Length: 252
Image (tube, rainbow, N blue to C red; front, side):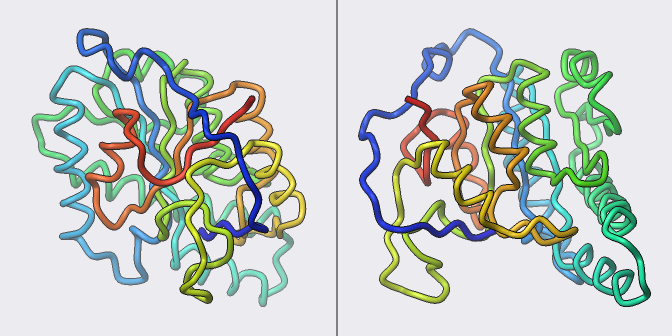
């Protein structure tokens, strides 16, 4: 996912929460792992490396909820279904199946001694989060991206932080893959995210930015959220700790 927007000034004050500095309290984090982690031919060593790194966070008696994106395989199947005449809801359902397959790959990648369960609905998510070190899930229903699932998961479990790990370092002034002079923004206001989401495409498998539902959930919950690159799992761990990395969503 690439986030691009006109260069503007944003508030310099970061949204912070004392939980990040409270070493004795259990921290519950939600991490959305973008589709870039799940290639057409999945790189098992990369997925295993991600799982091993995130295990260090859970080993400190913290709780982790992971939401797997669809990646290239989801787009391939969705495009094939669309060419065969499927409507967008059916394409969404097909993409959901791929995200759940990716979630299963994540579950398998964690060490056997680690408590990992798969969630297929929001209803039992708080219960599963309390009882297990790691909960993994994919998509839930048509018209709802895995970004929205991650935002809902963070809200319903009262998590302290949401990390959205993508194929770029955060939100840029322009697409950094097209313009090497694009600048990384340290913060972005949630209203700007919503503006961009409303202008983007929301067809199955192609959420150019965040879909509007995901942003509205962030806006109402004011969930501390960062966008970071998933190329290095340490980026995710640093974001969970509240360190200044990637792009932070601000609300005031």
